[in-house]
Length: 75
Image (cartoon, rainbow, N blue to C red; front, top):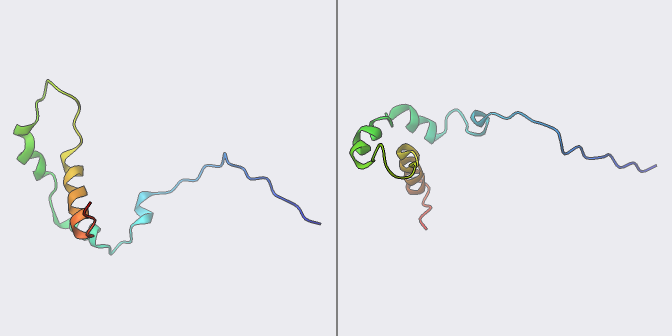
């Protein structure tokens, strides 16, 4: 007899972002070797603290460009 199980779409699964990137991945090595917090010092003068829209984190922007360069994802 054929039975179809009902799909329970309300299930919750906890997944850590750490599980997606292997421990020996190049990006983990770069993250361990580079002090990305220095970027805040470099760009601090370029941002207004009391005017304008909230910015995108400059470290995130830098990492996006770095990943594009490393993996040849030029648009």
